[in-house]
Image 1 (tube, helix red, strand yellow):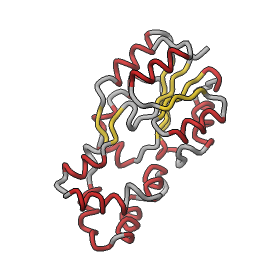
Image 2 (cartoon, one colour):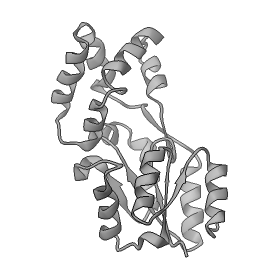
Image 3 (cartoon, rainbow, N blue to C red):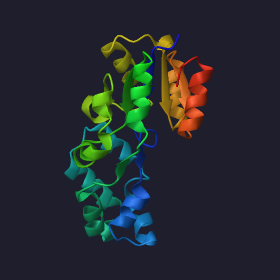
Image 4 (cartoon, rainbow, N blue to C red):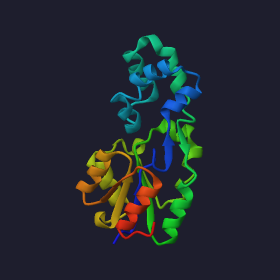
Length: 201
């Protein structure tokens, strides 16, 4: 029996809209692509979410990849408000699940910068039973440690839990630990998959 619903945040309970965010800041499509190739689309982005490096060190590493756009990179990531935005269904969905007796948690790769600058997108957090943001723990999905940490911190049984994430490798990592997994495409699909597990979604 499923008792615990664990949500990823980006592109599940919120939109992670880095392309639109860069466009909003006035960058051309070509420049936005160039900025992304030096930052979001590199393995360095994992370090943003891991929270081990400070912002200035990360910025230096972004710039080292494309020194000609140093000022653009600093402008892009000086403030990331609008990179993560709310989805209106997040709170009602969580409320519905909790009203039907399920515990609801979050487990997300998330940076301190996004947490500080995108608070409005995280307005669902007080409605949950708890969760983990990667930057606080210095570990990211799909490392098994972050899933084990959630299970142990909240005394959850893996077989009574389901994890919903939009990235297949993160779902696979959860399933390897005995957690049920759903690869998120949209709310309707996820609700149907939850119902297949016996959840009143």
